[in-house]
Image 1: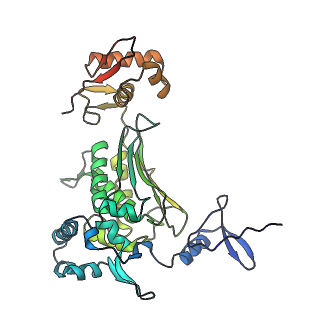
Image 2: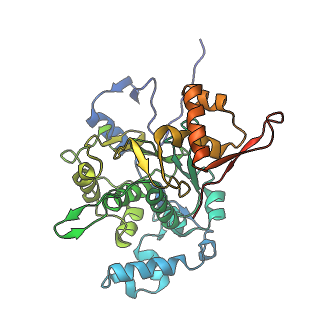
Image 3: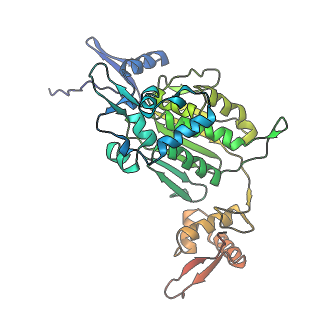
Length: 373
């Protein structure tokens, strides 16, 4: 009878959805959150963000980004002790340059590479690292808009916030007598947590996807328990404490736990719903509800003038993404009756948003006329 040798792993693995603890006495299924938490803690001898790269130097950082980060900290926290430190001491104090007492190895860490690194250096060291931001409101098979991010985390945060601002509404909201941005309050915390709590040694791709009724964010994770998080049960547990501390000093994140509670506080005012989901497993999932409107007025991606209903928008986006598409193909893609698609196309033609080019014999194609101003 053959044998299968299973080597010891630094990670927790599942078999058919279950976790087993192997010992000389046998294999035992871990059934409670406490048992699973203990297993993860045993495996978490160190944080991967502290991995030292002896040959990583300041030349591998984006030009000017370290000074820019220090300037932000100086403005946000004028009395912070890091402000008066020379550069080499700043790296050490912030945990971005360290010495491993056990091995004697010293140098810049993975955290410093992720925060400041040039894109090509990050990709050569962590080739699987990327963040996909997608909009899938209309074209669910592909996307309405896409942003693929492979740069350092300081730039990634800004790009993701800009992407959210481009595609999500921001309701008028008064707190006392002051207007605040609910979108910024909520997604500032979600995106910061999305970035700083990822397990960067895991090749699972991170993604932020905007659907019609919700935003779904998924990340590789090293959980300390499995299940849904709520404000009452939330126990702060740093996944990347160095990255987390740095983002707090930048003013882009709150102390552990505070930011997530703030999201729960504002989500109903923003979306009119409370069914937000934080699910901690090997893959961390956040589902955030969005305000839903049957008719969207104004611009779609800065290109539509006037008002289109939902069906007309779907047809327009498909035509925009594939100029040679025929009405029959549109009908199949969005599961809409051919006659309805034809009616929507006539509306788009009448509004002078599209124009048919070429002859019927050669097939022709659609030309987009919508203003991009």
